[in-house]
Image (cartoon, rainbow, N blue to C red; front, side):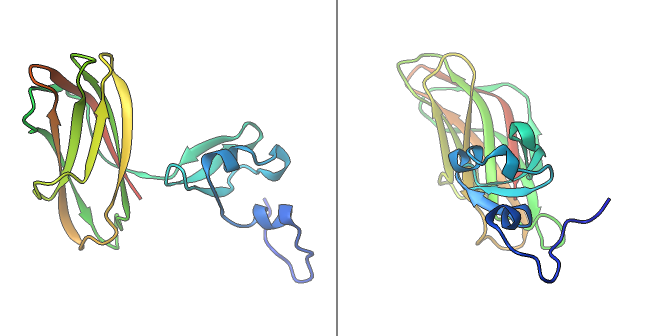
Length: 183
């Protein structure tokens, strides 16, 4: 297998330039790249989802996200009422030799007992008491909510993410699947 690389004297065209670099664009811009301009293994940065990605099957625009799974929990938990109550927590270490820590992505499967109120899944960092992320739903069936937290300014060392739930008066917020990714 030959390594695709530039050689002295090559004429640089737009197509060739894109074959040798990391493309950056929104989800719709990346999806609109012509199949002739895509190649398996090419790297992308999806600015819509804040994901580095790689083409898995370029001909069909199948891409994989390049993120680290920091933690996951599939235990169903719930909270009834308006008081935000901690139900899950995940810790991670930010270190230049391991997870360098720039962005945390939270993927949560959640629902509410009553569509007339809003269920909240609140993510708080390092016991701060304030929300770093607030995911919401009014759906009474499980659905996926996602959001990101910028951790680039955090110091090296151990950090925690506390997961709180709350809903409307007399209503119940549920969380089942929780996945935490980082780049």
